Image (cartoon, rainbow, N blue to C red; front, side, top):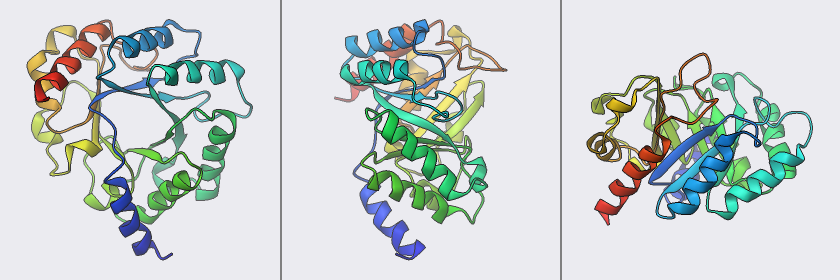
Length: 248
């Protein structure tokens, strides 16, 4: 199929396969760390909240199956967490065959995952068919959910190549105008780090979920803002739960 045909078919399919509203968790810790149990507990206690966890054995699937990841991913999925595997794309510079190979490792080694987190997603014109092809491959493997992470504003053509797009990833809370790209909120996510507890309010979460379906806010900082959960994790979950309930 020609690239245009792939894009048209994907846009129709992806429109029916979204995630959220809920929380996106960069779960970049080993499964024996407390973060995994805290996430499992929160998901079990809040069934109305969609939790999407990005699992990342070694900046990707690594070179070997890790049995601890197998059992821990299965444990999360049992309480409703959608787990997706971290895969680098280097803004489209990594060959498609290499990326597909890493996707296939996840599929073979960690069968409980639901799809893939395509990090370092391009957002300048020219790589749309690259990401459309990766999503088509994900669908063919039975792991159809793909999330692209340009970490900033992007174009509608890129948005239409994946199920969900991280349109903000940096320090501090975004202005709402930065999230209002005119895309369906069901296909957008945001990540903000180095954010103090006093900045995170019910009103802000309510507003952000008008433009995104999945959010992550943490007070963790560089150089690795994803090696712990936020100190206010349970409060953040409650804000999201209340925001979801208010829309029902």
